[in-house]
Image (cartoon, rainbow, N blue to C red):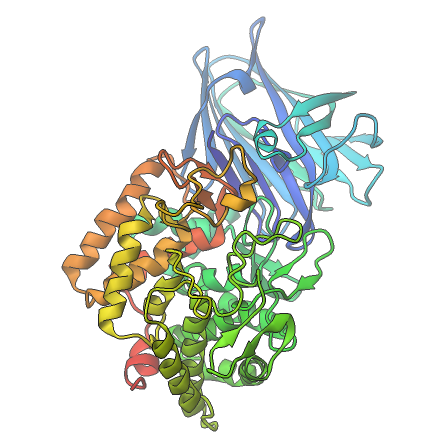
Length: 620
């Protein structure tokens, strides 16, 4: 089962399977954000489509159309010598989904469109007769007013006849059932639109929560085509990057007066760690520098007690701060932004936030985060990116001193020392960085995943000792780490989260176990391929032969799996064992971002414009 998605820059989306059926409660043709990018509600589940040719009626939903992707997802159907191309897109920053139908026919035919609607939060399911819907017909469509929310759904199909016929239909979502999630839903069939086609022509079916008239949807279609084209021109990358560049656009969203990044579709909102890890691939290699700045300032405004939010809750948009690494990633991403833009004025404006992070980590802040007597950062359980919690149980607690947190801490201090020198501030960071380096190397006599507990689990977290700009370990140890990760954790779709020779390893995400236990105990994460390739190329001195080797061995096999019909989306996770079945979100921000970033920066060697100014000439 493959799935497609198109989005609108608000966190809203349209998404179904390649056979255009609903396999999950998160599927729908209009899933709209009520408080961008959160509070998503399903308003249009699907549309039942039929074609009447002479006296024969064909159910388009049961005909195997072929999926196609250029700028938007499209489907090609051939029915009794009639050709139909169906293209789905959304208007940017509007809660509107539009379906374009291009019909090639030499005889008169009729289309029957039966919208299937709902009005629920996308985490929930609906019971029959639980929501009243009021219908009001107008010249080119119908207004639907759900009884449970102050929104009106407008459905527009010009030059059609609408016949209302309300009844509930039961839906069972196979994908949710397999995930042991709620999966029995009920949707409303509100009626049918009848449209006669006398010759080859195009027409548009509109679903919207907006007050706009949508008298000329073709204009919106071409506006969206040009918007996508401008993004590609702005990125100024070779054509082979097109699908990934277009895919990055799905994640950039409006958030009040700023911007943010949706961590993954369908169910994630904007998460601090995910946003910051994804930021270079989403906004810097694509040259969306203004968006990058807005994202950084937005998260800076939420900084509290030196902590950047881990997430904003989907139902109420409340910020939660249970993360030890988001703040450290924030400082690194400010630095990456500077390397691309030379925008020192913005760094000055964020200087207070940057300093507060370091001060709070040194002196102690929430969740037990503090600098210990050995100058390394200690923290409570469940605060790293391996943060799953089941009741009171943490499958991967990683408390005390996780290895990547120490790598990020040293990297942070080196960055802050550089920034202090660049901005003419007092450098209170460089000496501390040397103490961190000395104490880390004194303790890191083996490849530990957690330092003070001497945890020798072979996990991918140690790769950040190599991949970050500033590494506190010698070249020989860097090479050993890269070799170990390559031998034990790499797959064609990303890195495993635990070596398969570990007794705790789980090779499948779903099965006779809690999926959250498997989440970080063997499951493959594509985003980790980014820092791995960065580290691999780094220890190979960026030599062209090794960069080509990295592409052929670490990226090309992934692209071969995705195939020609790929739309640039990359799943959140895959099973640890072959055939590496896709799991989790159908497209994840840091998956897409890190694959694009490492391809551009590390393999193609297209480095940030000001990297030499802010890295090599300053680093000692």
